[in-house]
Image 1 (cartoon, rainbow, N blue to C red):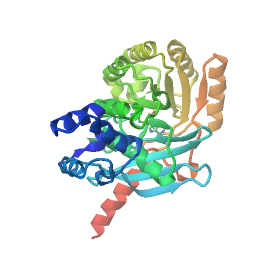
Image 2: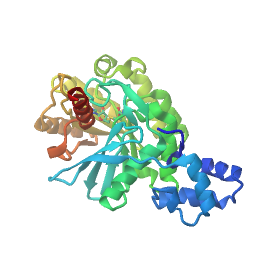
Image 3: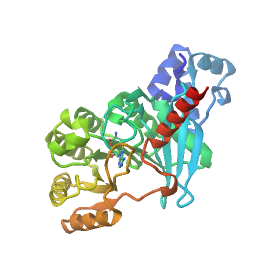
Length: 353
Ligand code: SAH
């Protein structure tokens, strides 16, 4: 990224401070923030009710960095759109747009790559490249909106990356998106998923955002969880569960437990009993996900039919369960694989030169 600061990543207070230091009247800050996030303006030059000189000074210090779709895959089955977006420094990230009865929901990335290293996940296989700015997170939403020519009402932060490992930018993003003078998206329509960074969960609770928190549980004992999620070596399940309980108590929001079913590993009776117990304790909704096979990871998904059987079992225990709907089956592949394919192709291309 060039040295100009990312205007789309700035919170109202940041913009107000700049406006003050520029000797401009304070209402200009609201205008600038509104142009970017309410009107989705993509160029400082287009902010036509600002004096020309102010626009020039803004443009000297700031830029609006775009996420530019370099590849768009559209599902013929359900309208899901998968974007490979190029950032201003040439890095690429995945964003997925899903169509539901209630409207569009967008699944955005929070980092380029990821350093959590979950064994079944393609996003972290090459480690973390860098954090995204709040502006680059918002940019994924705005780029998709301009592609479909509609506003998007629901956001899930469940693409590549661990949002709580990029805490500052992630919470700036939440502040910006939920601001009524900006994007104005209800916090209740935002879900973020974490592999269980305990201090981040607690800090988020203390900020009292009303977003839905999803915990990637995937195994119900520390021993098993450590086999597939390195983060489990840092935070024991007890601590994670207690942080989640704290989140629920402070925010009053229901939690979701994500549970990817890996055949013969975490889909037995004991696993389901443990899952029911944790879900009861947290009064959490359970989302079963037949694991998406990743090349070389050596895991197989439990069949959809078996997932149904497990769902019925859990429901008999009064647990609220869904099986993640398979969206865009014809364009899918596991999360992160579109990017990996793109990077590998580019590397091959370079070798051929
Ligand atoms: N870092 C966050 C958010 C990104 S991953 C987290 O861990 O929650 C979003 C969800 O997809 C997580 O629940 C993750 O465990 C799951 N996931 C990743 N790879 C998967 C795969 N191959 N099959 C099924 N679920 C997967």
